[in-house]
Length: 134
Image (cartoon, rainbow, N blue to C red; front, side):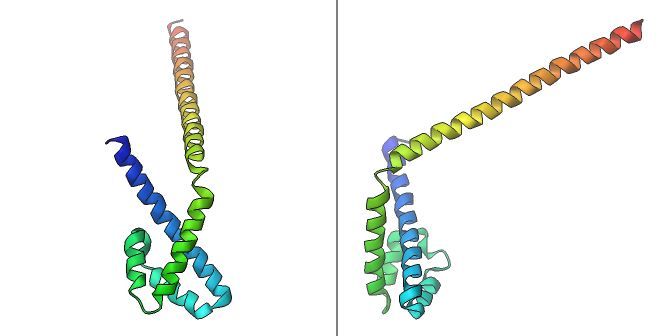
């Protein structure tokens, strides 16, 4: 797989996630200002509809109540993206480096313990054999 393809797929996942977070935020805002609208949006958004953000936006715009909500969701999504995406490359890179280091450290510890245990076990067996032959 080419890096450009991976980047496109990653961008799609991030876009879907930001839409999901925007919907959650709009539902929370509506719960305070318009509880019935909040309930409607929560029910409309359930059942996996948010897996594909662009299809979700198109579908909610076709609903009678959904036009204003879709515009609000798109605005919130754009705001979230603007506030968070500049930090994302560095955070992902740092997170992967830290995670890889921790996994490598854990693997090395396991390998070292296994080697030490094997050496100790071999030494114990050799001692037992020596004692048995006496």
